Structures are given as C-alpha cells and as structure tokens.
Length: 111
Image 1 (cartoon, one colour):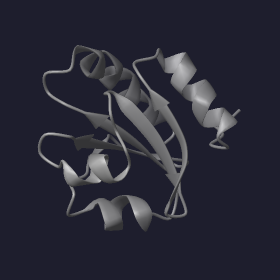
Image 2 (cartoon, one colour):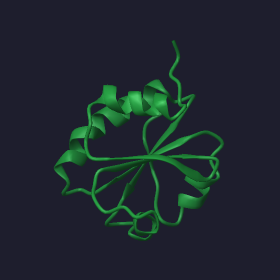
Image 3 (tube, helix red, strand yellow):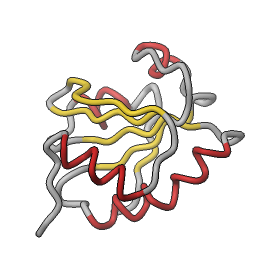
Image 4 (cartoon, helix red, strand yellow):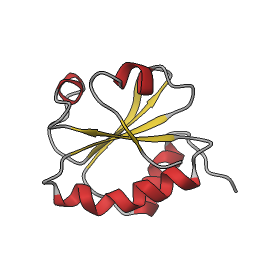
C-alpha cells in the first residue's frame, strides 16, 4: 500500500480512528528535505503495510491539523497510535533512521 493523503477533514477518521499505527508526514511542495524523504516513506509504506499506515498532510492545503499539533518546522513526522500522538521526529532522515525510530516506538517490521 502506498502513502495516503490526509486532509484536515479526513484526519480524525484516517489517523485518530485508525486500527493500526499511523506515521503522519507533515510536508509542503516547496520543502526540499520533504522531497528527500518522500521515496523512503513510500518504501516504508509498502514494506510495513501490515504494521503501519504512512499518511501525508500537506501543511498548505490543510493548515489546521499541523497547528493543532504544534508543527513548527517541516518535515515533521508523528506516529499516532490509538488516537494519540506517540512519538515525533523533526527533520529529514535516511530510511534506516526512520525504521529505527518506528522500531523504538513499537512498530516492528517482520524479521
């Protein structure tokens, strides 16, 4: 499964009411580092489809949600579990670091 586009309108249903953890990437079209991590997030969404949903929120199209969660810089990645924000990382990082972060947050990839 590839990444899911989430808006202010769909955030409640797609993220807060999701039945598995959701990694939300807050990004914008003009953000270079956001574009750098996009392929890694796409790969993670495919590889860990059974364990986590990777969602993308464009902060320009949907400004309410990022402000509600205090997003000040992008890319900001937040992991939501059971309707709550469980963990957050700000800034671009390589795929291995994103996977490490997810693992530390309790999202385990298959052995």
